[in-house]
Length: 84
Image 1 (cartoon, rainbow, N blue to C red):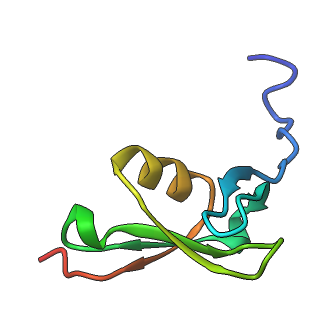
Image 2 (image 1 turned 180 degrees about the vertical axis):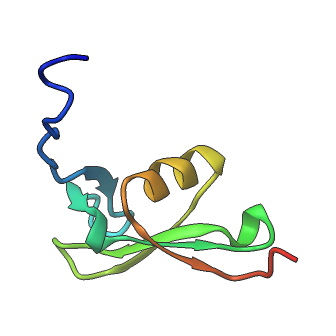
């Protein structure tokens, strides 16, 4: 057993790189600034956020890898379909 086994690593906030298609701004957003919606198909699975630079509502498609990264990073998720 390691002497460090009882020590927890500090929680570091996860930041996600994002870009706005309206103003072309590039920035980093915390998990709380994003929302992930998982639909029944690729067309209805997306993430959204408000651009911190111009205030535009941004919605972008989310493939399997993006879904995995966002959910693992603590982004709130809305399921738009039943899993039954």
